[in-house]
Image 1 (cartoon, rainbow, N blue to C red):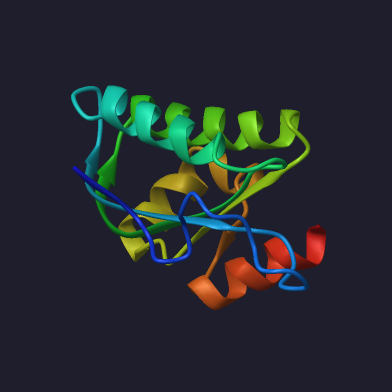
Image 2 (tube, rainbow, N blue to C red; image 1 turned 30 degrees about the horizontal axis):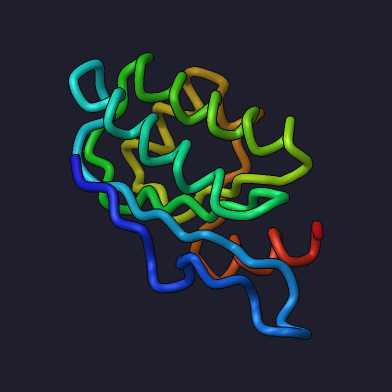
Length: 126
């Protein structure tokens, strides 16, 4: 599993008048029992960069996700909401979208087609 903090992240705050600061995280590979601890740690770090936490989570490179991986995604979403923020996922591939739908996770997790859609949603909400 690879987790990459995207170019919109950083320790610097948003420019004046630029709106809320959104952290972009891209994930690839399997989201399973073996990779979940690293994913949890990195998502927790990303969610702690700004208040309220606004996270765009790229799932385009995810090859599969088991119940452990889905639980980490749901926990990150809940963590963001509990702190007055949001997490919006984007670019989930066909296999992952099917898994999300079959497990009912798509009713909880906000998944958008592309990064631009996720950013628009996050900025509109805050």
